[in-house]
Amino acid sequence: MPERSRDWSDSHSHHSSDSVVSPKIKCSETMSGFKTRPFPEIYGEGGIFLADEMDRANPKVLPILNAALANSSWTNPMTGESIARSTNFVFVACMNTLGTGADRQYAAAERLDGATRDRVAAARVTIDYDRALESRLFDAILAA
Image (cartoon, rainbow, N blue to C red; front, top):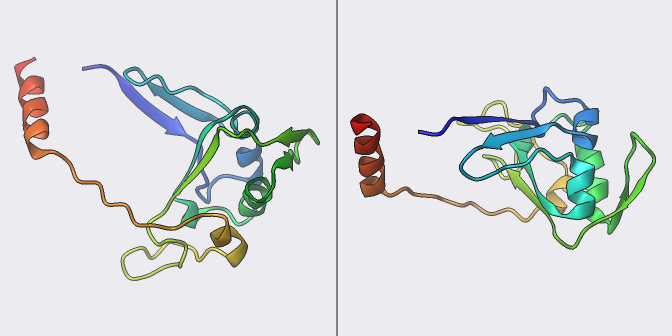
């Protein structure tokens, strides 16, 4: 089975506001070919930026993202460079609470302010898996 490692910076609260400006989106997935690309490059040249667990984000990060998402260009606060948003830029935010804050199940989630929630279309996506495929993969791993 191919080696898989994932270590991507996202909007978790342990990241500073600097990490969204120049995140280390270190994804190495030999089967699918993820690339390491900083947010300014993705914003300007196109690609998908994943803000995983956005409802646990450092509050200093969100205004930086808000400025980029609300406008057709963005000024990188670290370099002062003005970057035009690519028509191929896609922002994906994942969170358990739709930005509504903590509940009994997700006690560490933070409530996102209106400016942030306004920039992200909220929807619940349920992804099921194929049990037959899971069984075949498991059998293949055991047979190897």
